[in-house]
Length: 349
Image (cartoon, rainbow, N blue to C red):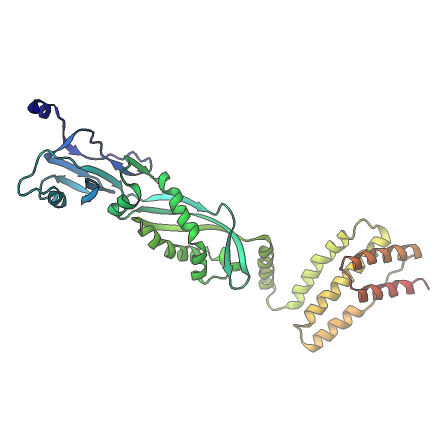
């Protein structure tokens, strides 16, 4: 009876894996009730690694090549099975194949803005995304730490874990890069290099080798993007603060006049003029702190020059009401309001 069972058994003569290119990282050779024949052929193709596992313990590891399975080619398995000089045939062993091909264009990104610490702005929030590529670097470690006894383990099974490691190390990467927060968008390569330096040892802990990582976009919060735009504007005008303030004033006055709302004709023009005078006073005060004494005195003299406008009594009253609204909203100070009021009342004499 035992002889008949032995005859009915199927023995494995060839062990190999033909990858299908579907993102499989680890594949278990189907053993079923079959056993491996003494002298069986093992074929490991380029970009593959084969691992023999005996009762849950990793034994022999094979790189690319063709092998005849004997006690000489299976030294660890021979030791684990207590084979002496003779190969006990047939035998059972789990065989796992691992793909060491580079897995490219893997996406990473921040689903929600993440908070980082910046030396200039304190706690700030950013979004970023890019891609990376990796391969299995240590099949034995990957088997024991990640894939285990699964029949098939794919890239999709590992995706969440790797992306989590990327997001976890972004803050440390920004800190170690030495790149100021406002300059991150313009220094994405340097940021990516710092991120890679943080991730390489983390990936190696699970048998993965990080081949490359890119940072394709860094989105700054709106308020800091405005600061960055101003910094760019400063770079365009260089050290000529006069030109920069002229540009800022020219941009701001129409917005104030438009925001004054609805006034038309002479009253609307006077309203825009009042907003312009108020803005000019504020800008002149700030600018005077950074200018030479003579330039500051000239700026102060300029801002005190009265604006001439001929208006009717009704228009004067309408304009005063508008200026009062600006004062209430904090756009005009009490002194500025009083000065403009005196100018307008003189026109009624």
